Image (cartoon, rainbow, N blue to C red; front, side, top):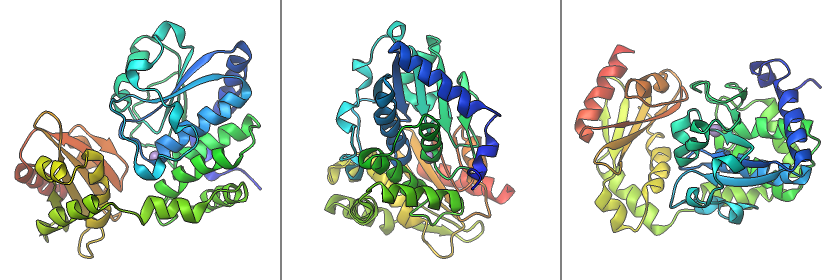
Length: 338
Ligand SMILES: [Mn+2]
């Protein structure tokens, strides 16, 4: 069997170079900070924790982190092995004590939050990612836009390093795989993703329990928030855009943080007539954050990038300093140009 097709995206020998460097770093007892993007999803967090668990076995000292504080881990991911080792940015070692920064699923330095300061301090950086919009930061890049999930790249790197997938490590990888493939429903899902899933199941991943927690479990607050968002759902037939927003008051009213809005877009985008879905949520400084989803005909990363954001063709995000109705008008106008 040949390797996964997305390996073609990597520069020749990059995987082996990364493995060689990590082995050498482990031999020296180096310290590596392993960082997910802020507001981590299953792919980012699962990838970070899998690297943390796996590279530790080689002898590398690893510090898993997310560059934001307070760190809010989605409840479904809170039981992954290694979660308790995550350090908040304020507790991270100073740059002169860190030998390597490893970033997971982050397309640009600003997605790293406070961890980006290591880049400014010129700490060597290994990038693992699958965003086509990756900005090109880092010294050694394992970036494969055709991979369905970053954890596939993590798994391949650990395989080259001959790190065995035990149940805990496999569960971290699986959490990323099942999240970023949309339970193996998104178009990026290919044989290589399915084969990795099979291998991880064989390693003992409790997949029914994990996917139940990830996809079929909501708090009452989340359901009430969904109610608010659906109450004001709007549809623009001209550009087949379904859109809504969630206010700060609604979030505090149900005792939830901004990360709870992620689940809203997953329901809103199921609208049958919609090609594109947009959900806005309040950003800290009076601005609004937009999440865009496309059924595939429209590349929403293009729309997001016009606001200074980014993402994938089918899922992208941005921040805008305008009122929700103005942002919607702008999105409609960008979509009608497309
Ligand atoms: Mn991802």
